[in-house]
Structure formats: structure tokens, C-alpha cells
Image (cartoon, rainbow, N blue to C red; front, side, top):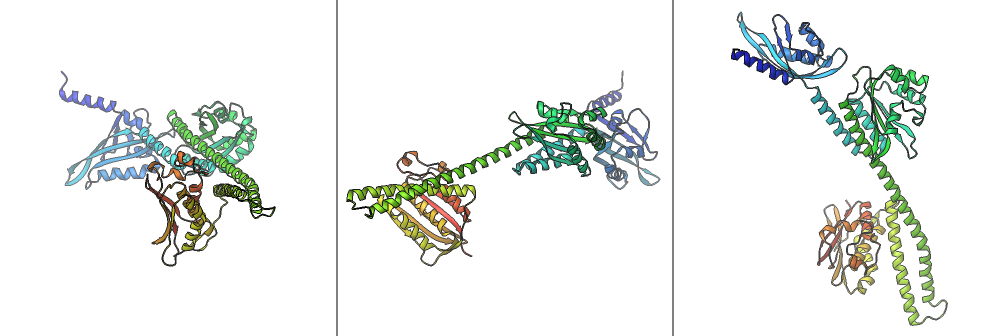
Length: 544
């Protein structure tokens, strides 16, 4: 019968093997280092040849060697804790780099009255996959942040290429296709900055990508929307990739050893390809790294499409604004003529005018003036949208500004049977702003209040509050539901369709007013209670 101690030892050994844990045992006095097979595997060592401490250090990555040696010496220090716990890289003979986590404990004994380390044992686990997963997760997170930080495609791609060169590649190139399917090299970056000239020359020597055969991995990735991975680029592969003899010579100089060409695809449309290269100094790409490259390409393609959609939307918005401005000008000219001819007729220039005719002429003028006001509103909106509206700053007396705006809308207010109150500040109150735009905002707010108020009072007032000037328009109208308080500032949106059928308008008054307020360095806000009325407040920076 096997002794219990041997059974426990065998169980421990099996558990260690199953967990992928290597063990080591070091004798500080003799320098003998005994490794288990799993431990040797972590260092890429075959066979059972003895390894001393110096051999162990030589297997550690040069950048980590001094740190690991110091940690070992600290653990063997008789005045220390005897604990060893660190992660470091190993470098195999074929150049592969692996990460390991090592833990150990030194055993001390009194020898000749001196406390010395007599044994140093521990375990080692290969944590390369975990470290790589963490590193690539950080890469993708940083790439997402970078891609979201700009709508300039070339800036985005340059940032992603530089980021990938730090974590995933020695060289990265991006080729984008246009509407006709023609590809062009948009971005090229390398890890140490020393291959930039070679990359530029390689691009000059190569013909257009559309002329490349499917033997070229980038052309194949773009044409077939499929990732192409060459884990090991052979001399024959380089010959196939090269398009000319000069191109071939430069590719050999670059020393490409592995590549992953990933198509940039968004909603089924190929936008180009991003290609990751490694040189002979690093191991080839494996399937896990291909997955990371594909995810990075997916996020990049989405960002490119979003940027392109944004540019298209801006172009469409500018075209709309130019169209509105052009049409508004064309409509304004005959309307101005109609108003002029009405005034000539009303003044009796062409002959006597009866009361009935004068009444009809008045209605013509009122309608034409109203339509002219709507066109002016559209013109202002189009100029603001196009970015051509400019502020002309001057000193403005607020009492005068309030009274002028009230005088303009007073006939409209009277027609609705409403009271209009001007709550002017008692003392002098001035502000540095654009008088015309301020008047336009106030008239818009007063007109809007009049349209949606059936009975009661409309009040306009102003006061200084700290470093701000507050101008408000209060009404006793129908009010605005909470869910619509921000929507009322959207272009062409109107709060109550039943009411707006009775009171005409473009749906641009509040949009224009808020845009003008922001142009003047202020803001326009609203508070409202359904059935009780609304208060619109214009905030402007006050004079210092």
C-alpha cells in the first residue's frame, strides 16, 4: 500500500501540472538551479541540460533582467522577508517573448552564527495570454477614445496608426477607396521612425493599388472584404507583393516578416484597408492578434463612415442654407415692389382712392409686410447656419432697446386685445452688444408671446444680476409642456399644431433668437407652466 505522504505528493504534482504551474528549486550555496519541465517550457528551453543562475538571467528579457536580479537578491537577503513575487518577460532563442509570473520563498538557517538563505523555491506560470489580453483591451479602449475625439479622417487614422505601432505592429499603412473604388495610401506610420523614408519610396515605386493583382494582400483584402494574414512572409511572398524590381528591393530592405491586411468595412461598403506589418525582429501574427486587428479595423471603419456622413450632412446643410438665402432674396425683391406700389396707390398718386379700396390696400400691405418678415427670418437663419452672420458690437441703452421693441409689436398686441407692459430698469443700464440683433431677438420673443396668448398681459423687462444682464418676456398664454421645452428651439418645430394652424410662422423665430443670443455671448432659456404662461430669459454678458 502506498504511504499517505506519497499519495499527497502525487496529488500535489498532478494539480500543479494541471494548472500549468512550473516549479523551481535553487540552492544559493552551490548555485544549482533545478527546473521542472513546465518551468523549462516557460523559458523556451528544451531537454534537461542543467541551468545555473547566470543561465536563468540570460533567459530573462534584457529590459527586465536587472529588476529580476534585484528582486532575487532582496529575497535572499537575511534581513528581508524572503518573499519573491514579480512578473517579467522571457526571451526565447527564436526571438519570441513570453510573460511569466514568478513567486518564491527563501528558507533561512543559522550557520556559524550567521543567518543565511539555504534554499529558494517557488513557482512560475506563463501569463502571456492574460497580459496580451489586457494590453490589447487597453489598445482598443484608447483607439475608441481617439476615434471619437475628431471628425477629421486623416487625423484619426494617423492617431490609430501611431497607437497600433506602439502595441501591435512595427509599421501600419492605411489605404482608402473613393466613390469610384480607386484606392490611395492615406496614412503610413512606423514604430521607430526610421523606416519612414523607405515606406515613402516603396509607395512611389508601386503602381496604383487598383492595378495590383490579387497576389497582393492589401488588394485582396479590399476586393474580397476578407482579412489576409501572412504569419510568416517568405522571400517568395515578397516577390509576389512587389510590383516592380525597384519595389521588390525596397520591400526586402524593410524586412517584412509578418502582416495582417484587414478591410475597412462599414454597413457592407468597403472603405479601404488597414495593414499591420512586423519585421524580422518580432514573431509573426497569430490568430488572436488577427482578431484584435479586425476589431480595431471595425471601430476605425465606423469612425470613418461617421466622419464622412457628418461631412455630407454639413454639405447638405450648407446647400440648404444657400438655397434658402437665394430663394429668400428672389422672393424679397418682388415683395418690396408690391409694398412700394401699395404705398403709391394708397397715397393717391395714380388717382383718388375710396375707403373700401384703401382698406383692401391696407390688407395687401399687411400681408406683404408679414411675408417680408418671414423671409427676413429665413434669411437670418440661413446666414447663421452658413456662418456668415456677424455681430457689430456697440454700447446699447437697455431702456431704449425695450421701448423700441415694444413699439414695433404694439399694433399686433393691440389687435389681440392684450396689455403690453415695459418694465424698464429705473436707472441707466447699458450693455456692449449688437443693437440690431438684440432688437430682433426681443421682437421675436414678443411676437411669439402674442401669438400664443389669448388674454392677459405680456411683459418685457431687464435687470442686471452680477456679471450678467437678464432680459425677460413673460406672457399669460397657453404655456409649454415640459417635454417640449427644448424642442421649441429646433428649426421648423412648432409647439401646438392646432394653434399654429391659426397663427402663421416659419417655426424659425426661437431657433434664430437662440442662435443670435449665443453669437452675442449669451443664452436664451425658457420656463413655462401649461395653462399659465411662459417666461423667456435672454442672458447677456454685462459691461464690466
